[in-house]
Length: 141
Image (tube, rainbow, N blue to C red; front, side):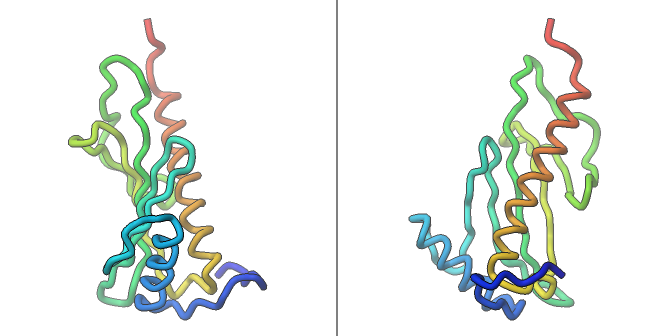
């Protein structure tokens, strides 16, 4: 569990509290805060979408990170869907890009700031995976 931040409100780890936080953040960003809220944030070229997923065993924060195409002619998915450093990594055929998905049990998040940290960490992890794909690309001719 991450250390609590004094300037951050406590977070009880419930789906209700997470949805309320996401709705508040959506409203602050000028996004639709309807139920269920989906917070969309851009970190450089990576676009994250965050929502609460309730399943057996508790509620989860599900964060997807849409990665940009790498700009090579004939760019295509590399390999099969994979796991990379806690991410489910896959090719999104409709979007023509890679997507990384991370699920975190809400019970592991101790305050509201830890929710935002999880989103930023996911974007960073996805960028690292994306960079590893670029290293595997043959040089452009």
